[in-house]
Length: 439
Image (cartoon, rainbow, N blue to C red):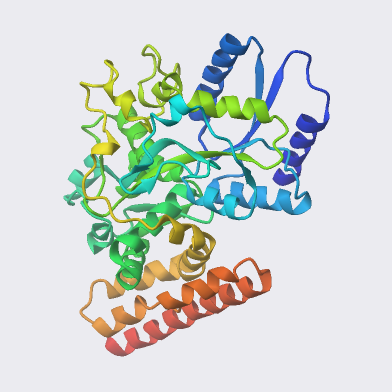
């Protein structure tokens, strides 16, 4: 029903006659409401000032980056020439690598004076596509949000690394979410795998999942639950973490980027193939990457040049913005000064995006009640054989390439998802039987 609703909106937007003197722009984006409101109002004002024509923006979101990407792919399957959507906005860079590979993005080279202000890379990761199919608009950091009051009350330590979230002392106090719906949560799992390696990475992911209270569908819900004290710690993107700290105060909430175990990742934008409002889409990108367009992301609400109602708590992709007099001598983090980021393979991350999501779903989330129960027992006993069995995954690292190359085949994909689901059930049954003997 939701998909039909958005298809109707697209049809109305694209095929009805434009209101005289008003331009249109259709954007699909996982960005939260505050971003949509602030960016829309700022762009409308900028466009009217510079071009003398008002703009109407239609926002579409299917529930998160992964769902938005699937929606766009389904629209291109129906009409290979156009989706009726102008821009894909937000969700990191992995979706854009996929969209470009499939020929679903079109090139646009921004003005030289703007491009020269954006370094080609930050912490080893590209800030924009060298062929100009996508651009990073802002920079994101991925770390751990924690509720100081809850941890102090429980006499639990503040977390420092991803691995620390798997400490049994945090059992049922970890917030988490489903990467099949959320791109930022997906990034956390990908970062862990790349930071620790395939085998150790899965052990860390399994330990965190064992401590997880429940899996939500959105990253914003995870952050909110942490601030409410429903959970005490959670993997979190910087924007959601900083928003909770702003509301609840730094004396109550904390956020850490695990040293040598995280990345700074661009949150990108790209024009979709067959964009019906191409000129306005290009202007939208020009605005976002302008000095004025960058300030709104980093400044606090109510300040001059900042957002009006919602602080966006994001980091500028332009180093010159950090030299702004209103920012330079504040405690605002400059991601270009981060030391110790991991050597992140964004090409690998893009190729296994859907594969990793489905592995986490089939091996963990779809069986979480049983998964959590088993972990609550084996995490407290000295039985390395049982722990080794618990951490076992049915996919060797070298098998990934074969899987992701065939993952678009629904029969192939469903076969392996069912195999992994059965693997998990049998594994838990075997552990339960051994636990009876052990006891």
